[in-house]
Length: 151
Picture 1: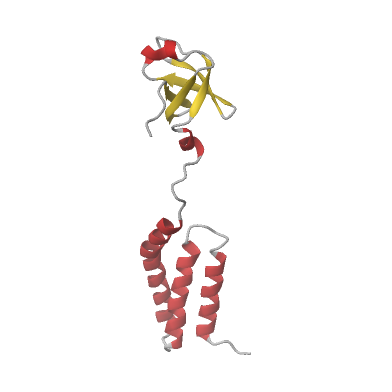
Picture 2: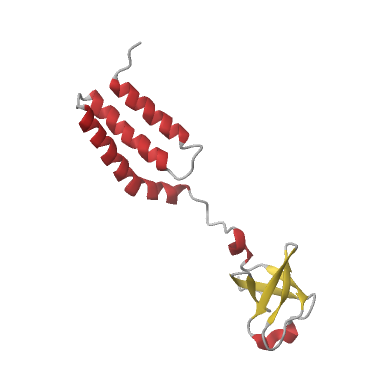
């Protein structure tokens, strides 16, 4: 069986789009869209150089316009991960806070963290075994306060 050039381009496009399932980022899908342009060009009888140019142009256009739209559409629903997921969480004080520096230690999900209380004047309210809430994370330090976050 002899394959036509447009069939080869179409097979390449389908292969790239199928591979996109395994490689996140919509890069291979953009190349697959470009290969569809090559298939159309070959079906219309364009020369190989014109087909290659159309593949390159449509791949770039889809990379700069289609890819950002697809990423926004298929990204997660805003679920926070890593240290960002700690913001707003309740934690237990394991080492009392120093009134002058505001530094102490807290435990969240079994992990013991260095913590800084804001403001420092409330250090007496956050004694051992009391609860504090994470305001933000700076490097390896939890910035915490004694009031639960407002809903």
